Length: 489
Length: 150
Image 1: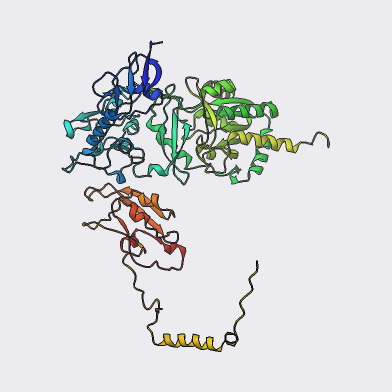
Image 2: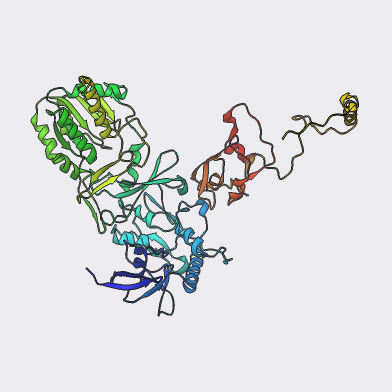
């Protein structure tokens, strides 16, 4: 525990740790201080000069991001000096800015627009020619508009401190300075799109989202990324047609800080493409009622087993377990997982090689290790009556073990959201459409053991149901076939 | 409270003088310039400031001025403008973004002119052409080709 200091922010007494800066103390106490170059997860640069605050006893306003707190400090975030300083900074930042907001993807979420509205003046006084800077493609996902850049160096610090490759740097001096790649380098690291998020203006833009939509036409919902065991907190932006347009990270210091990998941002395509639209019985579209009846009939076959992937939510797994243990006690439950690679480690972030969002949850709920579990089942080598396969892994490459198990099964009851390889392979008698993690609620336990719940971000795009509802439906259908008991019996 | 209607005088009640008076007015109109016109053979004179069908304007190079900023679509109270953007061709000097699709649904449009006011590039304006009538709903959706040459 670091020492606390007592200080005053806008007349309010606060107590903050002694190693904080003034801007952090203000933000943590819900006092707005404008900032471009300051980022809570990057080092301090102090070059944008917009975060000016007044400190009692100091002759001029100081930059709040580089000023450490001190005992008895009295900070004011308003006042004539401060407002004039911010106004002046805004004017200088906009001198060479092209003001091409109509064409710029950032407009609507641009700090230059926000602060210009809040602190700037309503007209420009600069009549000379503006400096025009270069336009470049930084990497496969990032484009650079030099003229819009305010050289806050957030992106440079990000590539130095978090992704560690250091591809970017500032070249030239004064009003000509701009961001550029080192010769022979390309901004192609797996975290490159974070530079787009942290760019406070429209200088670095995503080439995948480029000109896709204006940001004020999107609506956003919080979610948790399912693409690896890190479980990055994300925000999903959708347009009016219920199409996912982009995914950006949400700050969570315990899990992903402010970052997220490019793969997690761009992999949402499986939600809109190649989906299993309706239940299928022996390859033909069927109603949910017919499909349920067919599934229940198959589940009562002797020597049936259930196989649940580590892409399922805790809720789905415990519903499966409860249902099967109660109604079909002879069915044993096994687990399996998507492929695992080596972790990709960067100085400030790690992309887990475990491409399953809920391996820990599988261990907690079903009490099995997925790899050991599927190998044990594969080693049994006995005939299987019905294989109850709860899949939900996008982009899955059929493994040898799973193929062997599916070959041994007389029938397969598949729960999956995709109409993919698995559906075409082997003898899938009943296929029940489920939903992707964007369309259902649930809980994933990440590799640190943190359970993270998420809500659906969008309306389902198919007739699929979440696994919990499918299981509930199966249970109800099963009980409905039994003779009634109770008062009327 | 019910008011009693005034009793008409006998001269009004026989109607004849009133009919004659009306016919006199009709007779007078025979010798005056008619106020109606034979539309559509004869077109009415329309004010220069009439808010009619839209037009997309072009710059000196003949490129459309629109930069697909969606300001008109955002301002439109009838939600009748549909825009899809794309990158501008590389030989368009100083241009980044242009519309791939720019459609106005003339059936939804209320001709308020907010799109013209919202446009930062003076790329959309209203002509004084009276909105046309078509056979199908599809024909009322004006695309870029129509709007650029309107």
